Image (tube, rainbow, N blue to C red; front, side, top):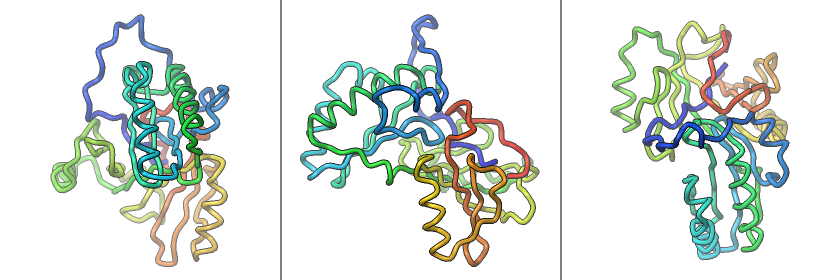
Length: 247
């Protein structure tokens, strides 16, 4: 199994009294909540993209949500582009999704509707690169330096500003047979994965392994470069999971 992008690690965790911390919830519990239809769990956190008619319209939406105390206190990652606004939620104090993320998601969606922005789940995805590496290999300093990334744990490197895709230094004993030394992981919404698979097959790809579906499918191009298309199905948490053998 290809691990999810590592928990953030690049930012200091907020200091929150233990009794004030929210309870973590599973991806299933998040999706079962009312008022979060605009959102999808992708590996680590809940994501939404709101299309705007102009850059200025998107900027007004960003200004509106960042004027709300409950949104500012939660410190979501917000990315403004001329196509619209991407928002990512995670409860940093528990390093997982929580009921607080549900509440903030509802608020953000409400403000988006008030500003005429429309959610588009079809463009949501999280990408990471997996590089096979034995535990004894001294490759981590190289990848950290060349990418300018930080190392939150033993197996992952992440962009300190959470913009670029993460790098997963996958232990070689967890690399399945007939897998290359490097492959790409693409996490997409659970209700979009079949369309993505069909598009990849129509473009000349093939399915290599679907025995772990719906958690992930392994595909390859005509040159046998591997891609794992993954969803949140089968995940109890958005936190970094223990990798399963045979990935």
